[in-house]
Length: 494
Image 1: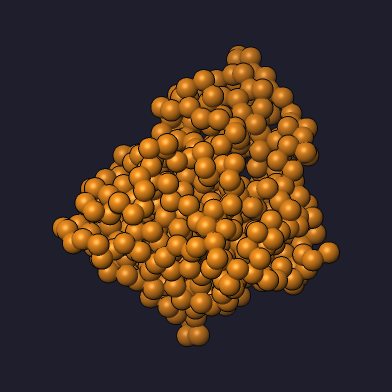
Image 2: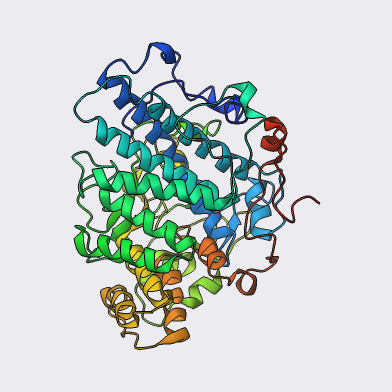
């Protein structure tokens, strides 16, 4: 992450402090300040905000799981026991003991806690710029809670404070409706303060807050509200669809990409370790997605995770340039370069012949020696095409549909790649929007959650059990550590 810098030892008690005593005690500097002597100067608030931003770098797991849990990709990797939790999710056999799901839970709560720490001390002093710091912290808390409720449903809701160990056992899981209400409150507050642009790249903006607010409404089937908010992003914001090479959307992210609404900044100038993914400065997904044992032009080798399926390839229309931009067909690439020796290895965790081209390593993007973990490519969490398609869906699904507006937004995305406009209505229009989301956002981590929230997961995902797999299980270790009597999500107790 282009991370502003690491600060503070801000750890949650009990469940969240134990979120990885082995990991989280290692990510903070030895010189971290005592909480009681902090927040006495503006710089303290800024450093605390940097600490809250820091957990964004763990978003790569959400991207992975959003693809491999769906019909878009398989887990891949060296073997089925390498990152076994991902293979369990791929096969829909995951349960409460799953390292990757526990990381999602821990890391996002660590982010919540760091944001709460700022609000706990928001009234210590007054200074110019404090409102902007609080607005950014509110967005970050909303984002981390959105990830938690998206994965796990009802989760403990703690606001503006940290918990003592004695309090932890009395904290229940709050209904998803209450978590979403807090998300909406935080994002509305942030959007009311922040500007459309930020002086420093990577900082939260009004557009990011409104786009995530619209997404939160969409996930709750609040279509009229989603349409209203997303229309603001489209009509008032400074965004546009990136023109030129489609894959360039994901490579030109540091300098004025008009399509980026919210991204996570990374840098390739500092190394990392497989022992602490939360410590990384680079985007881990890029190395993990890349071609195992690769030698040749353009690309670099990696770990061959998150491999697109033939079903995803077949979902693209004939002549759609996004297919090549999103998915690398390795054998076709070799055949197209007969004068160059290109070799690669198939991973033991599965092989489809396809790789995630949006987030795979290029030879000119390598950092220090451990290039698997140090990619400078940024993670675009929300981009303008996503906003257009969310708005199209919201307009098509609200109680009084505006199908003309829905088609206009949908066809803006299609026109960018010279595809024929859609003129459908009713269910056919909605299916066209869903289809467009799949191919436009392929490989970006949205597919599983789109299928779940629209009720189509059981018919599209092998092994998906209705009434169970809509949510992921609360990590059993966190249930045990909390001692608060949390009930496991339905279907995961056996």
